[in-house]
Length: 557
Ligand code: NOJ
Image 1 (spheres, protein in one colour):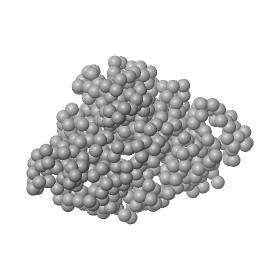
Image 2 (cartoon, rainbow, N blue to C red; image 1 turned 30 degrees about the vertical axis):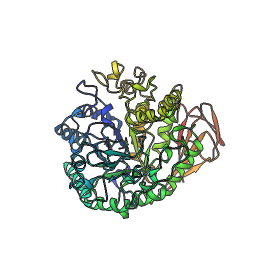
Image 3 (cartoon, rainbow, N blue to C red; image 1 turned 45 degrees about the horizontal axis):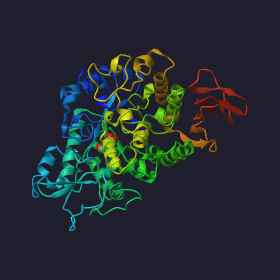
Image 4 (cartoon, rainbow, N blue to C red; image 1 turned 30 degrees about the horizontal axis):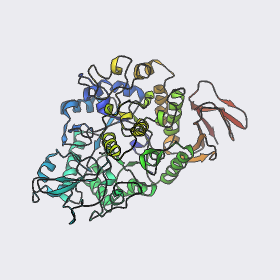
């Protein structure tokens, strides 16, 4: 496989609203990011993925874009953006923007036109339908943010499709003019000097013609429309066309956020010969703790399922495609709370999870705050949550008679605001995030978990991430080596090997709060990295792992 700069890069995701506020309005901003570039340089990352910074009414915190070519006033100006880009580039850090083109805001100029009349030139930029003859909605699809996927617009008495909130109408990708406008917008950003795009739910843009009804899962209120829009009929054609007309002409990183993509789909999306996107951002491992009722139907973590799933992806994409690696983003709960232990073994388990992920094949993504082991938050009242997904779900389910206590528990475990509480920079009020009132409360554990503390402790999670990032830059084995699962039957340990040329690394990761003994079949004199200061107890045949221990050995043949 031809080598690419993004193969050995590590990406750091910034959710600007929660990163650093420079002007005391309680909202993170671009100047705040500029102030912290040296911090990111110290960590050693190569690329920043900026969650949306475009002008937006913030129904979904910027994922509802009003103007693709203006900066959100709360975040600063275009001059601030250019300065951020320059200052990042000066430090050798690239910037990847979020591209949200499955939908726009209902306040976008295109939608303002589109809704005016049925014969408006922009009408067909969105997906409009009249009610069925019996007065029912155009189809039975549910919105991903609860409720139906259709909203009536009284001006023309027709419904528009919105897979997300009703302030996020879906763009009509069947319309050639719309597609060309999007490609031109992408090209203008690339010409401004940015280094690529993370493409929001990009495998949802092609819908089955006729928008047929979907089957309704048992116990659900609406049809599962995903059957008709996930990896839809024209998706590969659209991505090829987009590649050809825009980013394919530049040496940039493109990562498609692709819920519902299988390994077979991912190979099609990322096979370099096909010229669609560089890599996929997939979700199967994030769904392992969800039951048949979906995200809020919380199930206990099962390590065997995780092993099976990662192994399937590692093996299937080897030499055929490219995946991203992540535990966290702005839509997911904090991994140390989810798959680790956020109390007694917070530091050990955060480092263990980092080891497991960062030694796999793919491009790792670190989400802001992960590098200091930030945890989930448990606000006492639903009023303290800001996320539209949480709020809509709460309204719909309480109206259906669900128990508020159970819903709140699910929000504590799975809610997106777990990831969105502001970064804890130091132990001063609001964790040093703002001098004003933060838009979302800071996690009350900021006096003990914060960046200042992490930077002062040479044993911190931060410096461990720094080592892992540096290892990826130094070793082709991590970037290109072949993966194999070992100790498959061990229920508390995830162990695998990576092999490249004459070298093999053995990675052991314990998910247990107790000591675990596993069989050994190789020499242990050369250890690459581990999360305890003293070596573990080893004999010729056995290795005794301490709680949440991670240890990596290397052998040469
Ligand atoms: C995926 C984004 O990551 C999420 O935050 C957003 O709500 C939806 N797409 C809709 O844009």
